[in-house]
Image 1 (cartoon, rainbow, N blue to C red):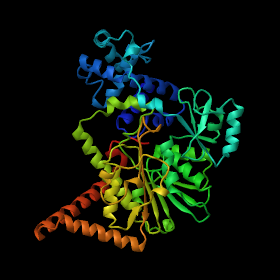
Image 2 (cartoon, helix red, strand yellow):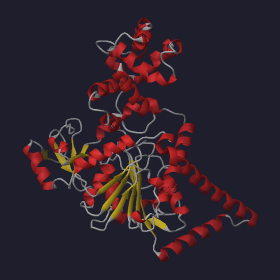
Image 3 (cartoon, rainbow, N blue to C red):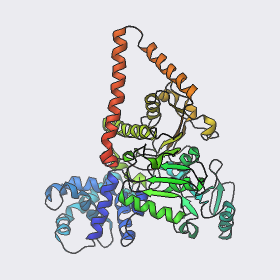
Image 4 (cartoon, one colour):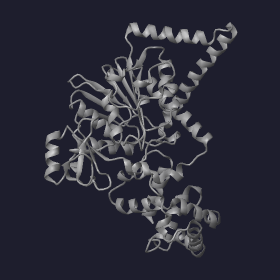
Length: 495
């Protein structure tokens, strides 16, 4: 029964939307990983069907003692094997198995009815279909400059039967035009997780859009460089930063979750990222005025988000678990935005920081342009957006001006749309500390706009100003409440 409990635990964590399917399955203990992974993936494929059958038969109500609310996913994996696995439930004759078998006839009958209702000839016809946008995303592979050179990596791939071509089809690949050292392969025909170069740490599997934040941050590469990756696990962006820094200086990498921190350590070791000081700590708990971080000049922020831009080949299986009403979604996005704003505000407190990149794998303006707008307003002109020529200037899709408003140029922001840009959905912004002359000019503009908006009467001007201050204060307070629970209180997915 133990592997059923492990599989149910994986489903519990996935429903919390704290991580991707691939990331979580990759972090499972090696002992039962293959068996648990197979059961989880098969259960997810049939989960809408299983939920409907379990609901119709009232299994959970009739077997409350065996399956209380917290054990729902244990019932789901057991019912899956009863209905869809060749050998049925692979467990001893214990009370949980017996609780399912008591309803065996009814469960099979409901499966038959459902197939008729949906016009399904076989069980496979009930499987969830993949998000069609995922098929338009190549398998991206970043050549790890800490372990090999691009030329050597290309020579190795050529020696193993791969070749460069105009399109990534079959055993061909293309070099990406926007990200140095990034290669694109045919995702349907290329499995890289067991590739020897990947296992040696010379190749890193990383979506193209996920490479943008480190590239835009453009960290310094010298012995005195000090950089922070505020939310580092699983480590793709961290190792990319280390490569751009050429393993020079110090890269502080924070990850508060213990299990994910171990994953981070494993990846750093495999990638040869020797300049990283990984810390199992919450970035929000770090004192910006601690002498340890006095020389930090660049910070990468890729905080928890809704994950609404992720459409890879496994995360589409979570769609049924993520269904929610519009009001619930908006409330969740508000909480996420408050947390994200608190992360940016905290980063801006580090005295020597001159450049901050904020990114999400979300397509919602509430987590993107509106968070950037709030951060700029809260800084009162101390920070501005880096110009387009420093933020992937050749990338065509930019931010949404109507959502950013009049605090900056949305052309300085980067957006990626799944299904349209050959990447997952993504958003990247870059703040830089304003020069002394620019700071006062921006501050005067904001004050002038505020006065213009509230000009009619002194009473009205005072009232609106107070409302604006309260809104900022509430956002900060909500974000601070996330310090203790961080990811847990938000219900999030990661990029």
